[in-house]
Image (tube, rainbow, N blue to C red; front, side):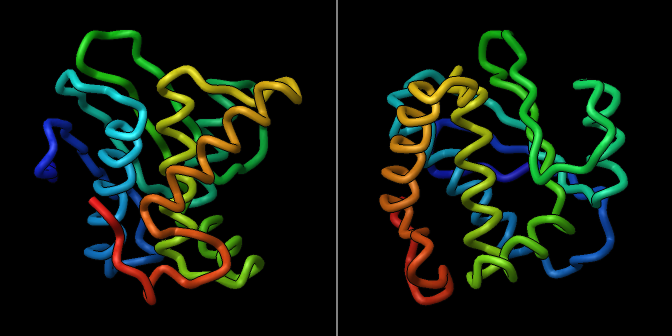
Length: 161
């Protein structure tokens, strides 16, 4: 478990073996979770669990919990418990494919998926055009604050805590 200088705890569990050098990715996940919670004004100590998986595992989770039998990039599972916001599952395999498609770093893609998922844990959604506009605007604002914009690779920027 990584403990950010913030009051929030992020547990990262790696269940995939395609990407082995996870130091930068884990640090970025911690920064993205804690940065999102700070930006959203979450002042109570909170925990988030992040599961790093491959496409096969995320497809299984998507099928078992959402009854959608296909892979996805990320899933969010809000907990409803005090102090524990919930679980996030990120397919690093799909994140790698998407980062190539969008032409940015894996760190930027994982940062984006993490911020997106934390917003879901906090109650944001994008089921209607109005909800989508609110969530995506907030997401982009937080990503800019973390220096994770699409136009410049993450490795050229220093995240803001």
